[in-house]
Amino acid sequence: MQEGIHPKYRDVVFHDTAANEKWITRSTLSTNRTIKMEDGQEYPLVVLEISSASHPFYTGKQQRILDTAGRVERFNKRYAKKA
Image: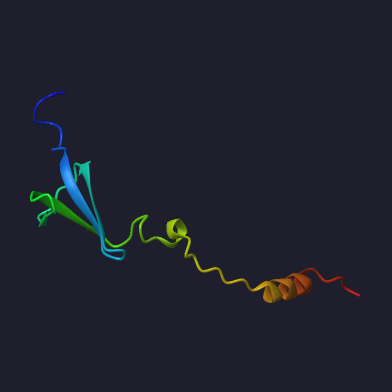
């Protein structure tokens, strides 16, 4: 790799505030925030509003509202045979 042209690749803590989950991974994201983890080291912190830990699609808590009666009525109204 050429020196001086690549972003710094380092360990970063991502914190999902909705699920209160934290995990350490490697990233090139830059941030001014830091956090001290259980291992005693200080890491850059990236705060997320939603991740796979809290997103309804991944957690299976997706709310489905079915309006089948309204759909059928609209279908019949739209495609009803004209007398």
